[in-house]
Length: 453
Image (cartoon, rainbow, N blue to C red):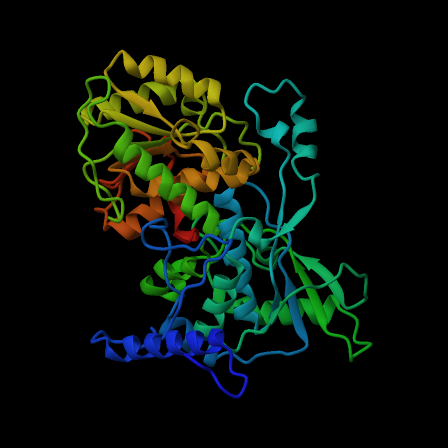
């Protein structure tokens, strides 16, 4: 074939191939429209229902919107929230208290920071002097709230449910005559174990304190109050049952933590089938409380110096906790114990003792393998505890210790998501049908009304 006008055979072939492709595309009967949303996951893990069963939507609370819309906001008043220290039970409740005090005062809020803890301090069996341990606990510095939590979820939840609250990304540590630290409950006299009796007086008492201690000039500068850690003093049910139960949802753990916890659940569900003669039904890990499944326990024998309550001597040590947990598992006929602990030697000791009762012990370090195990090893002490916290929420039963804010937080959250029965206290044991805490005093129960689930 002769091609005129200098047109090469190559261009004819390319044109013909292109025409055929277009014709085939148009001839297809299938819907050719692209989806409205495309998920791009190039080089980055994305949480999905399959790999993250702990994801939850933004807080959408009309009760909180009502409180915020009726609040008189003061654009010249800003709170910081950097004194969040201790374990997850302390840190979580401390941040929530900061937010609630800020809303009550009509103040802006700088995004919270978290004080790190020294891993050596938390190791059970450490032979350092107690005073030295307490000193070191507060030494390693601070991280942003994304050290534990999903910062975007926090910000977006507050924008949705309290749009009037001004959130400040960062504020330097500067000295000023219009900047002071304050422990919120110090403005109230005679605080019982159940918390501040008249929380609605907070704003008035704060204004009196500001007038007394803050310089009037320079008026162009904002009044900055560095909130000290308030723990178990704000009576959460003063806002009503619904908000008390949902307010904690402004906090959600980091996506990588949630995915690791989901992997642990999958491992428990699959790796124990007919293993060592123990027949365990594979369970649906998406259920709020998985029944039947496993019994989760908090083996908390680390030094509880930062806990608010006097420690119950009986249940502060390994032997009493181990005996109580094994007895509960055998009584409930649950053959698997998932143990949350930072002390692996004691976990292995418990596994040996439980095996004599045909109860198998597992833990996150035992379940996670390969890349997941590597990811876990890169986390700090308190970050690893977040994985345990999430896994414990799902178990058929949970058991913990009364002097631990970690155990209390898990129990209260389980009660919220699992519709537990009315809780009762007897012989220093607190039960609600889903969870059991050992070594509980009546004052602990009263204080629990100041802990957001």
